[in-house]
Image (cartoon, rainbow, N blue to C red; front, side, top):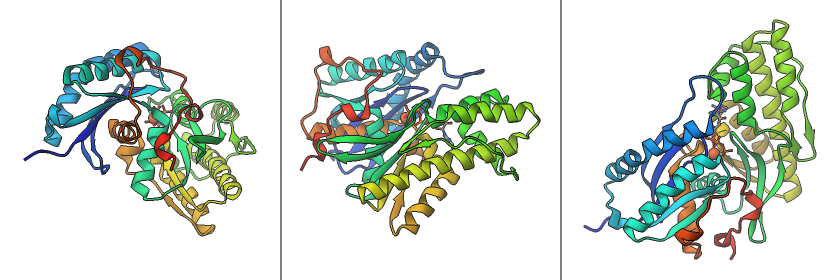
Length: 332
Ligand code: ATP
Ligand code: FE2
């Protein structure tokens, strides 16, 4: 029996090395990931890249085996071209180029941020949702318009996930901080005052970080800090999402990115959207965090729209922005 044709997707923008195999109907046949966890402090780009280089051969094999897919069933090889950490991106791009050459298949460049959004859009079945992308390095409210994904609002300083990670590490925890803060927040009881920074559809988090650390120095408990930080930061995200919905006259929202794993954020945004008579969708956790399946799925969309790149021209782009990449598959 001939197996389904798949696109193989390689993700390596930051802490996670991942290989996904996805059919043209967006079924995830295989997904193998390994996350670099620094023993102390935040991500060290070169150490993360070394981790990825070591992991990739095994991950490619595991993904193919678990999916029952042979290299001959692979239609194209997609990779995350940016944005991300240079050494990490380079590790994944090298593996993708090598596979494309070895298997004589086209190479498809994918924008990591748009991949987070597209895997949510296909899962939602929504045609043209507004998207809240909340991850480590990025925090954006995005909508499609005239050939591209447009950033309607975003963080003016750090990404929400990096902010949560940094705060947790400063409070004595380890990376990643988001899930640990979520657990800690459950036993918080007091809402502490923190700066609430919304400018139109933009947000900023560094003031909350400074204020939360000052509260900690004055003896506030970790649980109350976690509870208050979540309440404040996720309210800000809910507010800018609501403003964008009103301006763009939409009633559907898709969440994406690692921070979209958070129950409190999900509940706050869902409540807001449903009170307006709309609906919200969030992908399963394995597809919210960095993963090769979202790269493979965006790879299919791009490949079918004619996007491929020659190996010689397949350089990475650590600063590639959501709104500077064409989305020809959305043009009808
Ligand atoms: P980007 O898409 O900006 O490149 P990224 O590559 O760092 O981000 P993702 O896997 O999309 O990574 O998101 C990772 C972030 O998600 C981390 O900052 C982590 O703390 C955060 N995160 C994961 N789970 C949760 C959770 N339950 N609550 C809050 N934050 C979470
Ligand atoms: Fe990500």
